[in-house]
Amino acid sequence: MLVTIIVLFLVSLAIFARLTRGITKSSTCLIGKTAIITGANSGVGYQTALNLASRGCRVIMADVANLEKSKNDVIKHTNNSNIIAKKLDLGSLESIREFANEIKRNETRLDILVNNAGIGSCSSATIDGLNAVMQVNYFGHFLLTHLLIDLLKKSSPARIIFTSSILSFFNNLTVGNLNPGLDTPQSFRNQLQIYNNSKFALTVASGIFAKKLQTAAVTSNCVHPGLVSTYINLSLLDETNIFVKIVVKLLFFMFAKDSWTGSQSIVHVAVSQKLEHVTGGFFVDCLQFWAPGGREDEFEEIWRASEEFVKLGPEEKLS
Ligand SMILES: NC(=O)c1ccc[n+]([C@@H]2O[C@H](COP(=O)([O-])OP(=O)(O)OC[C@H]3O[C@@H](n4cnc5c(N)ncnc54)[C@H](OP(=O)(O)O)[C@@H]3O)[C@@H](O)[C@H]2O)c1
Ligand SMILES: *[C@@H]1O[C@H](CO)[C@@H](O)[C@H](O)[C@H]1NC(C)=O
Ligand SMILES: *[C@@H]1O[C@H](CO)[C@@H](O)[C@H](O)[C@H]1NC(C)=O
Ligand SMILES: *[C@@H]1O[C@H](CO)[C@@H](O)[C@H](O)[C@H]1NC(C)=O
Ligand SMILES: *[C@@H]1O[C@H](CO)[C@@H](O)[C@H](O)[C@H]1NC(C)=O
Ligand SMILES: CC(=O)N[C@H]1CO[C@H](CO)[C@@H](O)[C@@H]1O
Image (cartoon, rainbow, N blue to C red):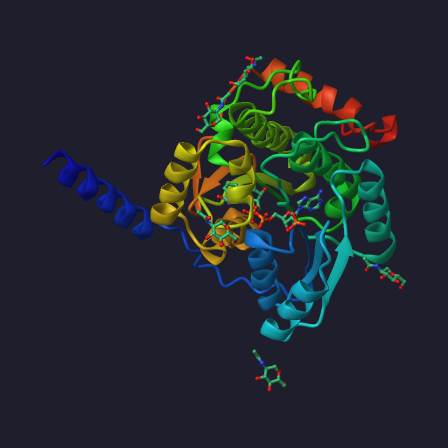
């Protein structure tokens, strides 16, 4: 009896999850516009690139992985040959600066910046000596966005989108643990907490970018893509026990979206005409939710500490 009820409950939940998947209805044309997408080689980043390209956008696909195949696939599927593949390793501040410099040299405009790349876990520090999950997910995008601000402003109205996560609500981020050392045990729980925190840091930065860029007509929003079946789903699981593995796999089997569906909210926030003036928001299934909360003064501290971690020059800091 109990088992039947539980099974029925889970099945209804799964059906509900399927029915409420947000799909963008926007048909915005992007001919003449330019977008950058980080982590565009796979998962929701790749699907976002495909979608924007199909709208006629010039798409710059950035990733640490070799992008040739993905780039050719996008061109093949969209007939849009205005696609650039460019190596970007968010785990290296130097690579980020090199990337941004080349963009500034080559491009005359930037309308959409999708800060999407992310990793679930990593057991070594970056060459900059920062926690790798924090750097790839957060610090790297914090720096990249700063370096591209002038180009975005020049092209305004422009949009910045951060791929955050609902796990950002379950954070315990403080200025003190913004860059956790590798001396903390690499347990599943600690790894997940750093991931949660990195996704929360993105919402903090997004909120402050939104405020600082309001007069420049550059919006900044966060998106939770949903539970999506991608490579990232498994990387965290290497650290955990068989029971957690089974539960997570079951959850994915019942509730996860495919990458195309997972990219829909990102695309929606990037192109929907209704959202032209919406900034500082947090989106799930193409709908705006409240962003995870916290103290404003602590957010400011996190911002200032981040400026130091990524070694921003005085003239590069946003006033
Ligand atoms: N999947 C979910 O359920 C879920 C839920 C909430 C939020 N998200 C977020 O969604 C975003 C996209 O993830 P996904 O699920 O599509 O996973 P994914 O398929 O693993 O895509 C992430 C992409 O980022 C790239 N990347 C990794 N390290 C990088 C680096 N140092 N520099 C530049 N690019 C790097 C990866 O390249 P490699 O293939 O070489 O590693 C990969 O192409 C992530 O920010 C993730 O946190 C995902
Ligand atoms: C791409 O363009 C070619 C030549 O113009 C055309 O034959 C083909 O159907 C197009 N493919 C798509 C997916 O639009
Ligand atoms: C920038 O332009 C140079 C010279 O034309 C070219 O070699 C390079 O691939 C371009 N890079 C990007 C990211 O477009
Ligand atoms: C991170 O999120 C997971 C999943 O909701 C949760 O179990 C965990 O407790 C969170 N970590 C912290 C520190 O809140
Ligand atoms: C955050 O959560 C992790 C894992 O749950 C814990 O080890 C750590 O001490 C917590 N940090 C703070 C500052 O509360
Ligand atoms: C639960 C699970 O393993 N889901 C997916 C994780 O990502 C890989 C690679 O894309 C998929 O093959 C799995 O189905």
